[in-house]
Length: 253
Image (cartoon, rainbow, N blue to C red; front, side, top):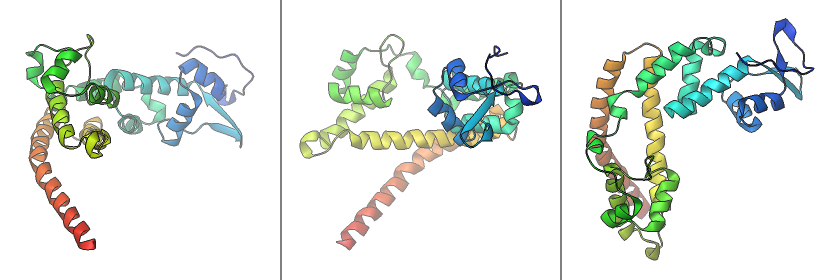
């Protein structure tokens, strides 16, 4: 239970209310972030006795704590967290935390969300070894780390997936080099698209798990099979759209 807050704000219906400044101080979350949560429906709208005055009860503290927990422990995007809270309702989400957390934990264990088993058998390499093996430049390595395309482990090393990704980045940059007028932005564009796609894929299956429409084992099986097929389909569709775009562009000229 959140600690009592001593202030002069009203306490209608026996609820203790606080101002944004106090809510931000207690939760450690900045006011703009809290307002963003409210605008997105992750938090309910506050009590507003006047146009420029808003009050928040202690329920907000519990909900913000839940959001922070799910982001930190489960690395879930806000839209997924919102759907999980929406399913129970703002009033029930915090008091049914155990049930909600268990579903989140189970969903995170899906096989298709885990790294390839080969990562457990291959010894991680440091940054220097990664650059030597993949031929990626130091500058591109730093940019890849910045956007999260390459990820260091707790010892500052990289796994086999990182080596493969770095190698492909280096090969792409041989063709689309700075000298030819291209930049790392081309990689960033595709990385951002993939992250958005993964968020939507996860949300699609996760929402059904939270709502009880499908069990964890069934969702696991369906997701694994479907995503494998999508991986086969994407290159074909991508080339088709790319060829069409090129033809349309040449026709316009």
